[in-house]
Amino acid sequence: MAKQQQEVRDLQEGSYVMIDDAACKIDAYSTAKPGKHGSAKARVEARGVFDGKKRSFSQPVDAKIWVPIIERKQGQVVSVDGADMQVMDLETYETITMRIPDDVDVSPDDEMEFLEMEDQRKII
Image 1 (cartoon, rainbow, N blue to C red):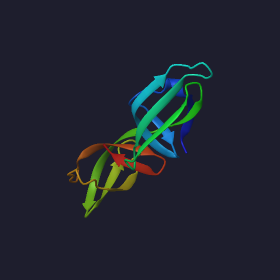
Image 2 (cartoon, rainbow, N blue to C red; image 1 turned 60 degrees about the vertical axis):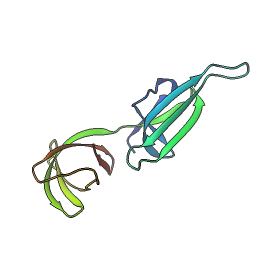
Image 3 (cartoon, rainbow, N blue to C red; image 1 turned 180 degrees about the horizontal axis):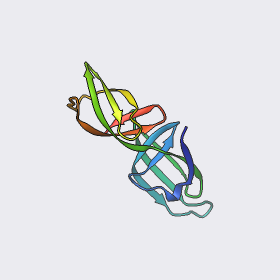
Image 4 (cartoon, one colour; image 1 turned 120 degrees about the vertical axis):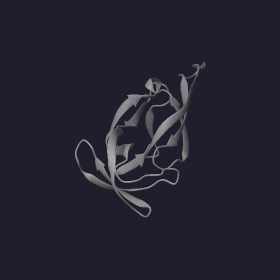
């Protein structure tokens, strides 16, 4: 899996983080001051990029956490077949089969942007 380690204190809203082995986008990030017997804690609330589930965690700000490497790519719709479509990556010219989201209307020759992490893809 394409990921790297980063300290919790370096996270911010809008960035990505791995929670329960799922890539998530951070919706809310808050910290609590250090107490009498401990270090400062951070609470992170996030939503899964590919599955949409809400997840959260709380850890010390100096702890290390995995951050996924998600690529933003450009593609062109080659063909539409029912609920699936063929998309050509405009960098590598590779053809990928993707499911059409309910809220998106596509037709051949449309250009679009999608997120890719390993074998997972999502239209944005």
